[in-house]
Image (cartoon, rainbow, N blue to C red):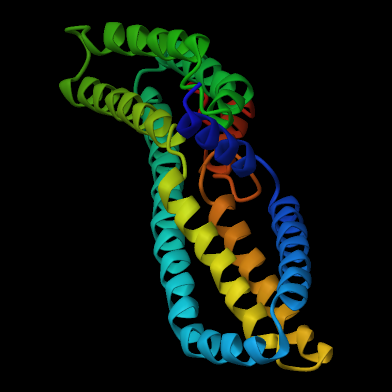
Length: 274
């Protein structure tokens, strides 16, 4: 099996954990790593060599710190923008559903059929497709069929020559927007944190803590409290980075609220045509 695919699946598995779980996992790993590295270096490096090692590590501390800060800031910015775009797209899909619901009111004879089909689609999105998106497995076939049903109903009604052209145009534009935004949502759900970027950020955190340990060898054990603070910052940064790696899973996932509000309004008959 390809090691790269195994690492990618592991990163996806991490992204599905809650933010608190991620922080706990990274913190536990770096605490264990720091303790082992400090013990090994303290035993293997003599007192004189510890002074030389600490001097070298002090000179490199700024470089390692800047590298870790730049990498994590770069990746977090990219992932945050991905998540923001996904949230915006869900809002656009909800807006298109609202426009379709309002447009259906201009045709009381057929509007109820549009609203019923739209309600079935939204219920399928929230109850069936959303968990599939969280697993990164693409869209739901049932939701695809429900959307196809909405399209058939809308296009049949919009093509009626006895209907005002403006009404048919509004209905067609709204359903086309729903189709496009659903496709965008599925594409965004398949996004994963790039494995090379995650590995680079993780290894830079490892090297940063190792360098900090090397600096602390010439000090009293009490100075290890400073290393503990650095370890917590590294764990927090990596946890946040991974938590945003998959927009539809994990602790910082994109919410259903815009689509849920539309479905709630439909179920309460707020767009009723009669």
